[in-house]
Each structure stands twice: as structure tokens, then as C-alpha cells.
Image 1 (spheres, rainbow, N blue to C red):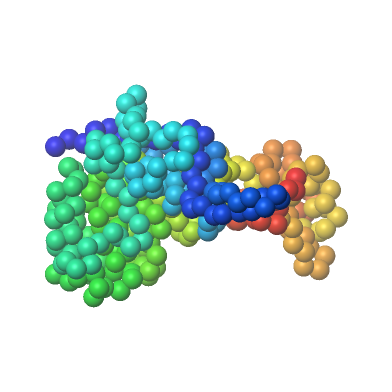
Image 2 (spheres, rainbow, N blue to C red):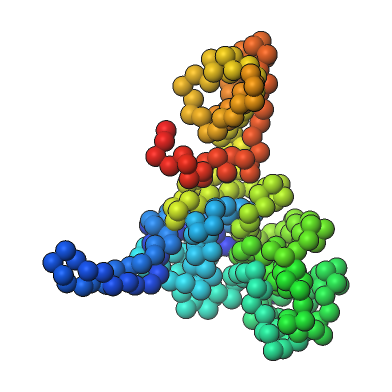
Length: 317
């Protein structure tokens, strides 16, 4: 069966609140109030046919947003649409959407009381484009026996099974939510290589949520940064790479070159200062820095992510 075109997604002014709590007003009356806002007015478009990194600190709303796309959660308000270009639909209780979206969480969502082979059969029945040969090859590569039950597996092996399910499903929208947790470094890198190889051979849309930004940034075509339930950035990885640079050198020269640019981070060791600045330097700035004996450096995606979401910078310019 030939799969449909890669799925895209769109969220418009999406709010998700969880839980209720009882409060007392000034006049002594009680009322119920929403306790936690996981997403607050999120607007986002996911381009079909890309590998998109979903970044954010703990509690930023990443898992909530990904659950919306897979119809595990409904928005409190706003709209969610998933599907092929020109044919996007609300995923909630929508068999066409949910059969073509594969969300893999850290747990792998395995059937604990059944052998892994039974879980794989379940997914083979559920996912119309399931590749049984790929699933078998990946389990062999990750050294996981399908005859075992999840309870007999380490955390890393469970994560490897989740990664196997996500890749073998070949869903038009495949979502990996922190699936690498528990994997050792060689297994993680093998997983990243398999994503790239299978994505090149079987194009689809892949969303990858990870805290190991330095490891996975080579995979990303687009990047979404969530911060406290809001979208801080949503752009291509190339655009993201132009959002910051560093200057390192004598304090007086660095301060002079900084000018009016926003400082994302500053550190000093003796007479040497390094500042991380927002934006990209132009040719004139680069030449001036060299003449002043100041080293101009690019900013890795992980460093930029850390600086932009630093809680200490909230409310600063």
C-alpha cells in the first residue's frame, strides 16, 4: 500500500489547561479555577516532509503539544489540524488522522503483560504502512529479543523498542517524544542514523523532541522552541543558526563592538570577555572584530537555545 503524502499540522491560538482548584474570593465565596496552563495561545505550522526539532525546557509544553497532534489530548480552546496539504482535519476521534500518526513516548506504550512480538503484531494491525522486515532488523541491531516481555527489559531497551515502533510504522506523521531516554550513546547515534536513512528512502514528517540538542541538531530542517507554554521561535534550522554569535577578546574591544546588540550571555576571565549576541554579524563587523583582535564565533544551536530560554532573562531586553 502506498502511503499518502507526508502530513503537516497547524495549531491556531491553542490553549490547554489541566486540573481545577478551589479558591476563595475576598468576600468569602469559593470558586473553581483552572490550575495549570500547559499551552497558552500557541500558533504553529509544521511543514510536511521535514524533520522538525521540538525544543523546550522541562514543563515548556512539548509533550502536551505533541499529544494534541496524535489525538491523545484535546485543546481547551483553539484549533488543531493534521493531514496532507489542503486536506487537514481535526485529529480528535478521527480514524483517518490517527491511523496515520505515530506518537512514540519514552515508555514506548508497550503491553507489559505480553511478549514484544504481540505488541509488534498489534502495531502491524494498527499501522497500514508497517514494515515487518524493518522492525525485525532494528530489534536485531538494538539486541532486543521479541520473545521477552517489557518487564524484563532495561529502560534503554524499552526506549529502543519505542524507536523501532516509530520507524517501522512509517506513518506520514511520526513523532518521537524524548524516546532516546535510557539509551546509551552508541544506541542513540545508531537511532539517529536510522532516522536519516529511512527518512531519505521513505519521506514523511518527523517531529523529534529532545534535550540532547547538540546530538540531534544535525537532523533538523526546522526548529520549534517552546517556552512556558508559548512558541518562542519556529523557523528553519538555517535561520536559527543566524540568530546568534559570540565575541571573545579584550574587554574594551568587545564592549565597543557589542554596540546596541542584545546580549544573551556574558562571561569574563581576567581581562578577556566573551559575549553572546543576538543576530548575525555583517561583513563590516567581522572585519572590525578581526582588526581589533577579537575572535568572532558561531553559536551552536544548543547554546542559543539555552540562552534564549534562560529564566534569568525574562523581562530583559
